[in-house]
Length: 431
Image (cartoon, rainbow, N blue to C red; front, top):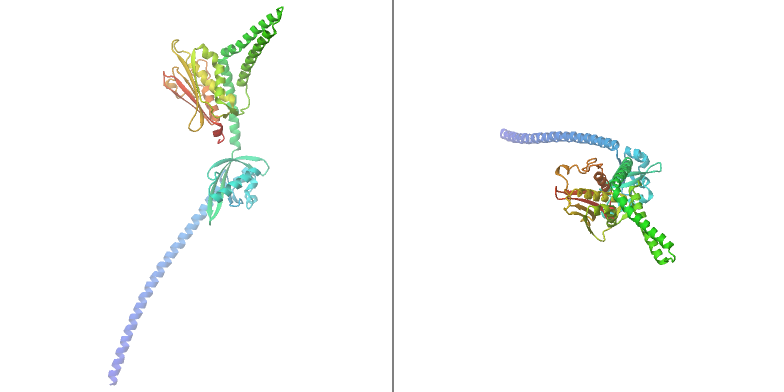
């Protein structure tokens, strides 16, 4: 019995040992799996750390690059928060407005603007924050900056918004336009000088007609004064008749004076001041200066001037010069038509779809040859025997300086029409 008991105990012990070995095997297998998983997780973690370090390095490089661009930019770049306090400013701000970044950070942006403009800027920012719209966001505006030295600086300003952690910020890009403004002023002065030269040339071309215009009232004055002298010699003075003749003499003297005054205003060089002008009346005045040539060439004049056109805000002498030049060109174009060929000059004014005023000057001359179409507007090109080749070029520059356009339509043998478009007073306010 003892041997049987011993074998039984030994069998149980062996079974338990096998079970333990199985459990150990399972544990070893699980441990191996966990070790493998930990190894893989560790490798993934190392890769993530490497990727994170690489991202940080790229971020540092990008930040360094952006800072380099930020401080190397010619334009001033300045960032403000929702309250208008400066957050950052680049080096160009000092070059433009005289302030270093440390002098601006934490202070109101209004210190860089004239007071009235600062109030307006605050209102625009508040409207944008409250209502989500403002004309100052995403557009380029002409403003004035206030330099540290106390003077104003003309600037182009563009403004954009961005968000960090839900907070809104605004970035403004400032461009100093002082040099551009100076160049524009020099260009305007140069254009005025060229325009003056072409006005003198235009007056030279019209000299005979102008002399005839002035001679008519002078001849009438001479005749009326002779009659007046004869009346004074009569035994019985007819004062009523004398008064009537003197009144007519006075009218003719005024007419001669008006012609001379208009010519003097037209040819003299003066600053390019702009006033509100009725374009229809300006056209009638130009026709008056050309009326003698229109009569001499037996030209039939047709006027289609739209009533109640809005006024235009222009330099009257310059626009008169353009219209007069177009009229003279049209008259000149019909000069060589056959004697029995009808000569027609048509002038119209109208308001187009953009509320720009259009002036059309149409003749039934030979038109512009195909080879000349591309060159007719270029400086120093002329089809006239004694022309300077500056009339149309200067005219286009004058019209473009008024934010308008000069164009033409022409077919050889079918005449030519020149069109001038100018912004009305309301439209000009947008420029």
